Image 1 (cartoon, rainbow, N blue to C red):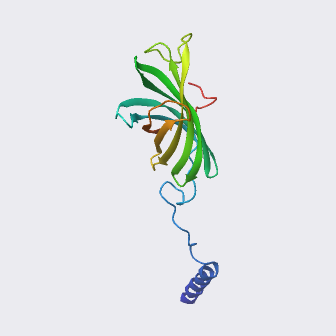
Image 2 (image 1 turned 30 degrees about the vertical axis):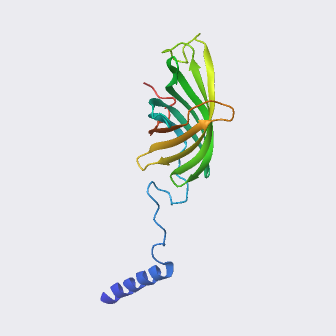
Image 3 (image 1 turned 180 degrees about the horizontal axis):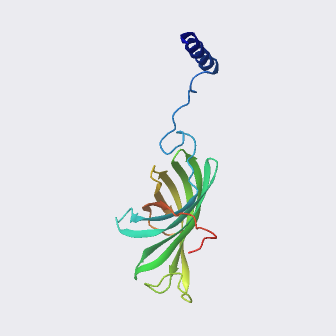
Length: 189
């Protein structure tokens, strides 16, 4: 009987030696991706934050959605944010809309964006309100740096300045938020 156990033990040892032990695989970076492999970032993010005018330190709230589309290690973004844009007559409800693009390295996104500000002509009225005239404000160019945290929070730092020929006080904006879950299609309430 002990010879049979010895033979089985030797056979198992030979099989393990012939097949090798566990593969030597580098551990993934936090978030499930290697340091260079882009994290899956595609989705719609609901974000909130602040914009600070660099010269004066004036601060205003900003919030809305950022849509990220990923293709390998590159991304494109579209965004629709709302803020109170300062004017000589007071704050005007405004939409900050635009498109960006850049690269992804792990959980870091670096890129640029072109932005337009759309303002309501009636103070305190949403730019989406029917029949309220709107006007287009300055065009803005931005550099962006974002990080996707392990918990899924996206934090974006945006440095903005006026496009050539435009008038706009340079700003720094920080927004953060989470991915909105996809809509459930075909489910009963």
